[in-house]
Amino acid sequence: MKFIMQHRKLVIEKSLLGGLYFADSYTLSNCGARSPRLVAYIGGSVSEKTFRNRLRTEPTSIFKVFMRAVEASDGQVADLLVCPFPPPSMIKTDNDKQGAEEEDSEGVAVLLDSDWQTVLRRRLLSALLTELLPARNSPMPSTIGFVGFSSGAYLAVGLTLDIAGVKTVATLGGVGMAEAVRQSPREVCHGKRFAAFSTEDDPLRPNIEIFEKFMHKRDIPVEILIRPGCHDFSDYTANGLAEEAFRFALCDN
Image (cartoon, rainbow, N blue to C red; front, side):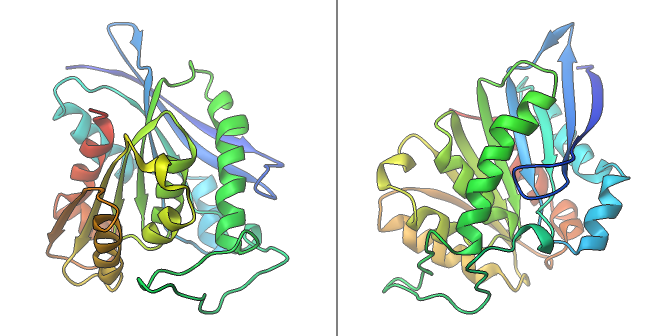
């Protein structure tokens, strides 16, 4: 199957996130038809320098993995939006707490409304809906699937629960998934599909075990896959888990 692809760098000079923010938009068309579906990828935490460098580059490695998933997904065509994790200058809040949060009896951090993670989740939700999606110059997607890598997993799971039209989310080497669910009303999980993938030697792997147990107690299934590798995104590309995550996000059944 052949696609026509258009890439655009979406730059928001004064974003609701608190400064300059950007994302890479890839729109696909097949036989002139535009896709009503979107997969949104949120990357892991980066330094200010790396964030600025990515403003001038294109996430080709992510796009290539995404296209392999599209080609293997039986006609499940979708556009792609690649969102970097906001740099440190954007996650400053009045309660910029970086220490250990209080944990509940299930070992899951209790995030307050004033904590930087919660504030960042709200800001990215607003930026996505009112800035990034309108800037794509494409029809608003009827369905969205999320993929979150590393610290981006908290945001990916959180936005999945915050947006009614999102049905699927897959995380790679993620952190904060259970925390995102814990601070959301239980009923918003209904009708959503969750997947959490990790490598064997990823230091964040215990977060997947916590997430699985946390969701099991709520009778919410989570698809788990663990394969060899470490924490770099290249490890998840090499062992096929990145492609698996995109394939999961493409399907909203």
